[in-house]
Amino acid sequence: MIVARTVAELRSHINSMKKANKEIGLVPTMGALHKGHTALVSAAQKLCDVVVVSIFVNPLQFGVSEDMDRYPRQEEKDIKLLEEMSVDIVYIPPLKEMYPEGFSLLLQTQAYHDILCASKRPGHFDGVATVVMKLFLQVQPSKAFFGEKDYQQLCIVRVLARDLDLDIRIFSVPTVREADGLAMSSRNALLTDHQRSVAVNIYQILELLAKKAKQGRSPIYYLAREGKNLLLSKGFSKVDYLEFRDAETLEEITNTIKRPSRIFVAAHLGSVRLIDNIEILP
Ligand code: AMP
Image 1: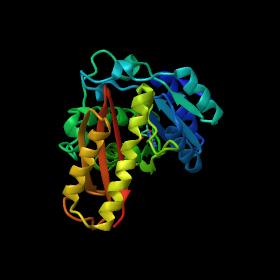
Image 2 (image 1 turned 90 degrees about the horizontal axis):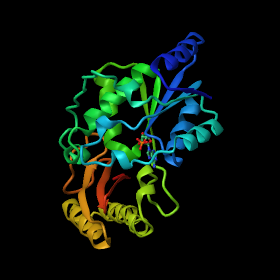
Image 3 (image 1 turned 120 degrees about the horizontal axis):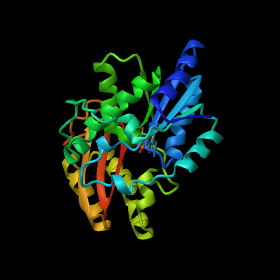
Image 4 (image 1 turned 90 degrees about the vertical axis):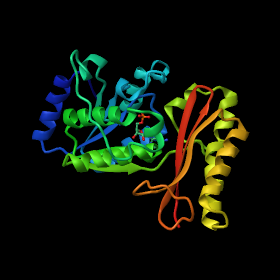
């Protein structure tokens, strides 16, 4: 496996692979890899000749009071795991390589900018769009793979590809969960044992709400309120949102489910913020 740390190094490998007509797939990550990430890698390996996994904790997508410094890092372990999976290239640029002195560009996304995580983490998706676009230009993939776990991010990346006429197909991979249903996340490593036992309630409550929404006995706005109250009663310290939205347009649903939809949640356990979402089909 090639470990590239600079744009120049990466580009020389990409150029020779392009010359050999290899189809390149990109899996962007922030490291501390788990089975959610490896599901993206496996999906990429099925569809591409060459798979590039990037590991970069992107400061542009963290707010000043957020957990960038605490974000779990385990580079050696990640490299070993990717090597065992026969990944072709792991790209791990240092901060100064991605954002050299004087770097001054920021992509601004208008789509979905005032809902869900965008309204709670101002600037977050501009940082995501900027780093994803840089990775696209550096790696030049024809396919890129993102998880449904970060559904709003997935929607924004699709808009990025569409609005900038990128010749890159965006693939999504369903959320990989622990045996008890908790969505895998690098941030789960920050939970205490007690917080971990509370965290599972997110999935249980989402499942309960999805079942009730399908039965259609209560209006959706009522179920959303019920879900929030349940999370707080189970021990979450704060609920940023719990909302039912159209799976395609992300428009909020308040009454009944008529089209494929999703329930989105972001909730805090102490200083750890967890997000999740599940599908509801009418
Ligand atoms: P991250 O390292 O958290 O930035 O995530 C990198 C990619 O992995 C993103 O496309 C995420 O949506 C995806 N991802 C993270 N957790 C999961 C999961 N549990 N299941 C599927 N994909 C995931």
